[in-house]
Amino acid sequence: MDTDLSFCSRRSPVVCLHGCAASSQPIASSLGLDILKRGGNAADAAVAIAAALAVTEPCSTGPGGDAFCLFYNGETGEITGINGSGRLPRAQTLDFLEGRGYTAGAPPSSSDALNVTVPGAPACWCDTVQLFGSHKV
Image 1 (cartoon, rainbow, N blue to C red):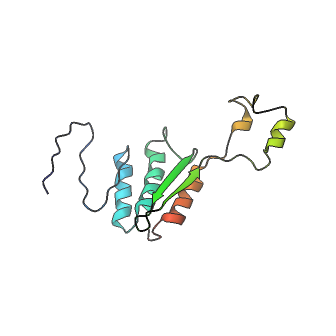
Image 2: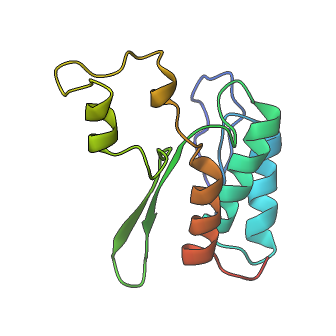
């Protein structure tokens, strides 16, 4: 294979023939590639990389935050999204907030405990593997 790898970067060049996994941390990328080699698909590899980044780069990502997924099905051409943003408690309705004096014009402050959500990343990871994973790894 004739490849021009003259691009100047601090990162190592990578050439992929049948699949690729990339992230900000080589260990996480390597894990994703291992998943692909064992028969997993892109969804399996992406979740493995996200979980590895929670350990190798915890200041940027992890199970305590939110996650979002766009999955492209090459067979159907369909794109499906998963919203893994945090959820509020079921009881925190508009009526609940209005009963405490909050309105659209006067919402809770950004530091108010009412703005804390349940982290959505773990559910997004599980949904991604369940809906789009190969179920082989």
